[in-house]
Image (cartoon, rainbow, N blue to C red; front, side):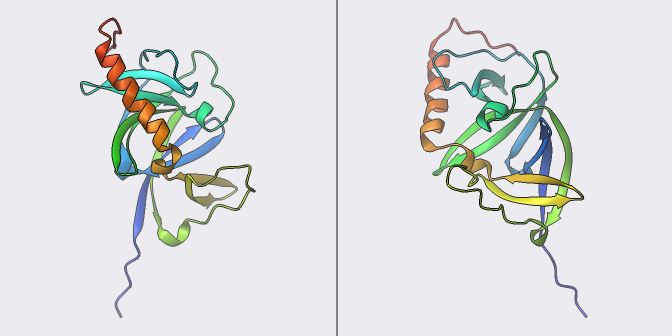
Amino acid sequence: MEKSKKRKNTFLSFGIGRETFAVSVSKVLEVLEKQHITEIPNVPDYIKGVINFRGNIIPVIETRKKFNLQEREEGKKYVIIVLDLRVKGNKTIIGAIADKVNDVLAFEDNAIQQVPELGIRYNTEFLAGMIKEGDSFTMILDIDKIFSQEEVDIFSKNDKSVLADSSVEISL
């Protein structure tokens, strides 16, 4: 009797505050240790600034602000997860700040549960699902739905303006 093959999805799990999130490993380009982030004026407050990634200037998102979570204490350790984003067919690379990377997880499709409805005041469309592990949950992010086209346009616009301004220094 042939066993039916169940598709496994692989995710990188990471912590932000007391919450655990995960993204598909296919979206993760690299995980970087804490480094200098060059601040950019006149951008939304959740854009922490920019870094040099493999010779390219990429925006870094403060996920705590983007997700309306409590701010990180000054000087606390963090990592930057470099993600390959696709919004309406446009490719953008961003860095997302997380407190720590936990593990690479593999789950079968049926282990991922739907996100409960929380009412119209809460935007949960960027959550692809949740995984229950004991008494805790891992929220699976649909990284391509976290940012709107307008936000991606801001990232692209600021990449070009930073490149044009030779007075901005990027630390390697």
